[in-house]
Length: 150
Image (cartoon, rainbow, N blue to C red; front, side, top):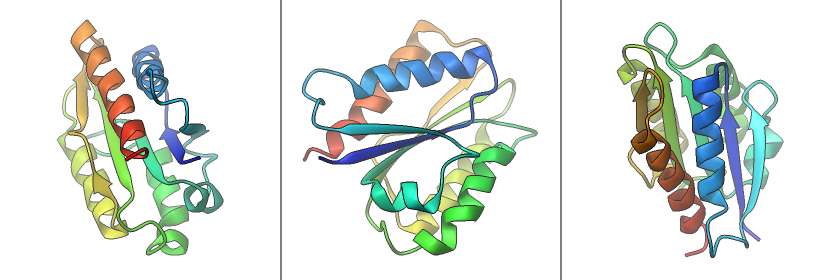
């Protein structure tokens, strides 16, 4: 059974809504054969990455960058996992009050260095999540999970 690792830093009610929508997407019809493992960014380890086949990443944009927690996750797993998951599918969602570009740029730079392949456009949300934002997160979760079954 393929394993989808969800690594998130959920620091607000808005981010909680986005996480729940992503997780709902991973449970869509036909995705029962994907094992979804959820880890807070400060708790996720290289062992989690090595056991996974795909990744969903969630972060706030803090001062125009990734959250410190998601950066810490990447710092801990980068070298131990550098060539272990080349080609693995991933998706990203980012919540910010103003600008999410720096967080996306950082995440894409790191995942590119690890050889991961983006399979869905990043979901970028500013302010309170709308119905469209939540649907986009649902689609993100379903898309990344479905990619593991192909």
